[in-house]
Image (cartoon, rainbow, N blue to C red):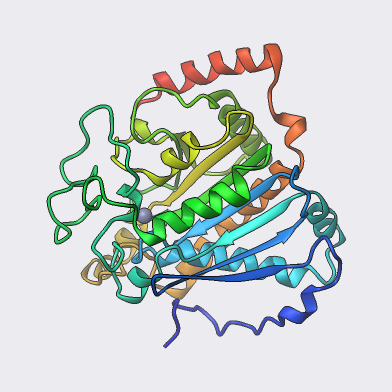
Length: 336
Ligand SMILES: [Zn+2]
């Protein structure tokens, strides 16, 4: 049984063709802890000062389309390696890290939560500073109810700890890193959310995030992403990206983002899929899966380019102060 729904048979990838240059050698790792196996892959510069982009998916086991977006991008990179000189040049200067299925047990069991009933995106220890939506903002009542944060005071779940370890060791140690974590299921439109989820206060790197939004708009003027702090939608207990962001050494810039693919449009176009558990969170028809994969590939590629050229757009000095003002007025006045 295929792990992920496929619109067409997957081509075979010969990993041995990837050993072309020293700097661009791909590495694939299996991490086995407590019977959970995580797969990560990385490719590109081994220079510890090189910018890194991390791509994550499958934190919620039902949201397979997020994993597909990441796997699709990995596949495209692998096929471009033998001929795309620009890509090789890019990979000499940046590193790309992939963790496409953070919650393999949940995906195997067709569940949002992990096998212990914990919603990994509510599992970090921090609590929201203001009231959260009932249950959906994270609850500690029971793993039998959705959005369970885990037992208060208990160690984080293996999957959450594994994701945070990847971020801590491979992203947050670098002077500059970006992360994109792909989800689905909320709203009609596609959103890019960034910390914080625990508070309505601004993240310290708000001007950097605003600069990234500006260059995204100039590079992809027809994109439909709503780009805003998660707190403009609702607050959450235990968001892993809040936690990872706060744990980043102060001298480094780490900009984590969550891509939330709006699934309500897929449901409106094909209402019968609401009766399937996967149908609520994933496009079902093959042409729609293709369209989703096509639409978001540019975003992933854009982030790799943004990392490569980070010194060109990261604000410093007066420009940073100016962008802080623009960002706060832009996001303050935006309706949630
Ligand atoms: Zn999700």
